[in-house]
Length: 633
Image 1: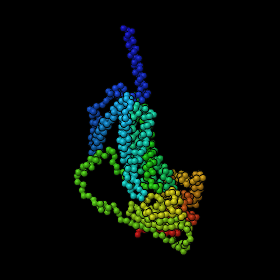
Image 2 (image 1 turned 30 degrees about the vertical axis):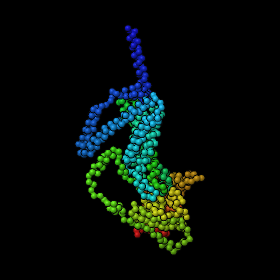
Image 3 (image 1 turned 90 degrees about the horizontal axis):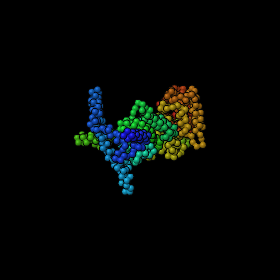
Image 4 (image 1 turned 60 degrees about the horizontal axis):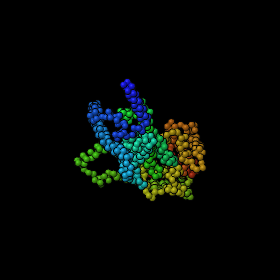
């Protein structure tokens, strides 16, 4: 009897050792959680059966949210916050319940399909692939469009492109299409890595793995994309618009001019994910790890899954944000490479959480009275402002009227007409500048359109829509024969106080110009050296102390007069054929102005045509050999 008891005890101890070894094996091998037991249930379900929550057990959690809404109403004395909390609680309960009701039959169908497929071969193609098709359809046709719509609707601003003739094409889906492309590329890439290289579930299309994994990737990616869009549109519309336009006017292409903004947006949108990974496991315990532990998984097993998820999220966020930002940038510029900040508009798209409320409101208001309808004629009358015509007149300056040079060949010609200021004004400008040292003074009242004309000539965006018969020529060649960036290198526009918008130092700006201007058979280093030499020579002529030292100082640390002279020196050192200057000496005293004027006269005599805007009457008389006057007809 004693021998029989000892034998039974030995068998029990051996069975316990085998069970412990199996549990350790499960913890070290994530793929074991994907196997289906004999009863058709996952191995983890038996562990978590004792932890299942009934609907009645959720009542305390719902009571907490109700108490919070009451407390917020009492403390804030506002019903809005309390209503938001109640609505959010109800939506959470309903939406997650519907999700569970939708996914449960899908999970059962796929598991049964896999079991039946492993027992019986053959059958038609549709029946064999119905399960993976259903899983992919749920991810690509339901989750992906909703995530893309939510990401594109969260940003305060959005992008509205225009067609080639400048009119709106009423297409507000540009950002949505960009985001859905970025999400599909990033999430599918990370999901393939996870499913086929890391988790390796059986079957590979297991909805228990594919759907939750894609859901986490979509959610984190759309949050980062919406943050990136907000920052990017702010950069393009206001914060860095002028610095981008300045770099473009110096001959940069779109990619080069927007690199600073691209890096800034990428850094800002990636930072929340980086911060989350820095504190995970120390300050924060993520929801997936908590859910797995509560569901019966060991902490080791749950932690390994969480490590995988965080790394995949990092990859998905980087890919989705990079693709989105790059595509939005390219769509924010027209085919001439000009930044169209007028294509950036307020985003009035409803978020997913607002759709149900809006549909209810529409049904209510459609049943009630809508008041007096505004007629089409009234709308046109309100939308169509009175047209103001602006025309350019040309005359020879008094100092040169007695010395006409009829034999001088035209160096630069402009003959444009069109509308601007959202169609409220029309402009007609026609003039030629001969290659005889001409300095044309562009004058007119403030706000008449002088800067608009100069930027239009430089092919920068001004909202000016030229007519089909508008033409410009340079050294006998039509504008159409030049690539837009090459045209801007030859016809260089320098805005008023442009240096105040630049980041970095004059030295880094020279390096950027050297990258844009060097051509085949010439090295960037030689171009940079030549640009730096000419720039410092002008600075010395204009009494800028310690020129080389000033080039290494940040723009923001330079005085207004110093930064204005340095930027003008850089512009002149690029040796353009035409120089368009908008108040280039507004921050200078008389002595500094006279020094700059001597240099401008010298480059004009060497073949550079200059069009200059100034409100200084004495400077007009000192420099002008031609008067271009803008006025209202």
